[in-house]
Amino acid sequence: EVQLVESGGGLVQPGGSLRLSCAASGYTFSSYWMSWVRQAPGKGLEWVANIKEDGSEKYYVDSVKGRFTISRDNAKNSLYLQMNSLRAEDTAVYYCARDYPYSSSWKYNWFDPWGQGTLVTVSS
Amino acid sequence: QSGLTQPPSASGTPGQRVTISCSGSSSNIGSNTGNWYQQLPGTAPKLLIYSNNQRPSGVPDRFSGSKSGTSASLAISGLQSEDEADYYCAAWDDSLNGWVFGGGTKLTVL
Image 1 (cartoon, chains in turn yellow, cyan):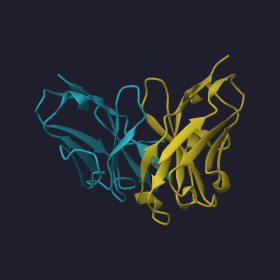
Image 2 (cartoon, helix red, strand yellow):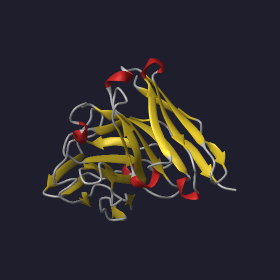
Image 3 (tube, chains in turn cyan, yellow):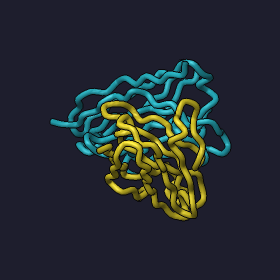
Image 4 (tube, chains in turn yellow, green):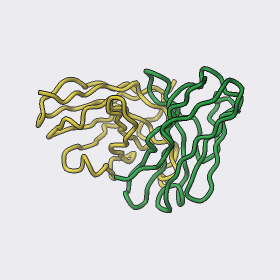
């Protein structure tokens, strides 16, 4: 069974840092792009970042550029999101998702599956 | 970062057919494929429709998707109470170099 499990969420003060992790299992992790998608309380979905299979390409939503870094460790089947200079508006449930199934034509991908999410709260 | 436009709410009675629209532009739906996700209350999103009109295995054929120009649509026929959920469209945006989502449509089964 393909499974994604996020961890690392919690309460952090504005300006602080947090590192999220996503453990993948049930498939060849190193063969697929991966994404982070977040959902603020009571709001809709917002894509945050994605990363190519070998980590050589990364894309970010404008609001997190320069503050968040997506990375992966294919040997550990893990995806990460390093979040620095956190703001109140970064408060959300963060989901990791597999970009499926294309590598070179990633624009035609879809997100499947999704993890259960981890809550990040930025507050003093 | 601009996204896709969906109606905030939709409703129908059991057995009815409901359609949810998703309006985009030439840089997203117009040039790439659209996907739909279903989010049941308190759960993570789940893939519902991919590549404009394809259903993953396990998704009932009551759900169907279509695309025309810069817009996509999700149709649900034979509405059931368990279809009550939030529905999101998404597509890659070539101008923004990122994925964009619609704001979500909350479907209520009356």
